[in-house]
Length: 208
Image (tube, rainbow, N blue to C red):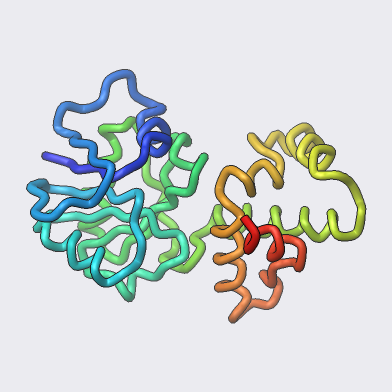
């Protein structure tokens, strides 16, 4: 099986964090090229634009795996699988993913075995599970900052020591990107008001 991975250097390092040697059948690209010859494409730089989706389909791969936290599989072709490829999450042994077809799940699981990772299949909803939770934690931290409960540094230290999280909420926000956090919260808040982003988070996200 030939696998083409479209990724930047950080994403590549995270995806390879559980292996000693990259699999020989994996080809790395820094951008999406036309006429890809492969069985599977992993597009970690994916943007949900029609032109990119059409270009991915030209690969004629049996499976296309895209880094798409906010999207919905209803708008994607049937051979697409969504994963949570936000910065920091690809380092984990489990890859959060969504698919509407069992056949896609089986192929995707065999693909990620080459990176010594297992799939965690979640509902095919915008935000999946972990990004929703982390975004809410970051949002609550910004609400607390607005109320002068504590500083960013103190909040990060408290969360890491108190919950054993790998990052504090503000560190997480910087790692993932506040624009991604704000965009997801804004999308989710259209149907669930509890996800409404705070004023300070919005301000920092739009100015970053």
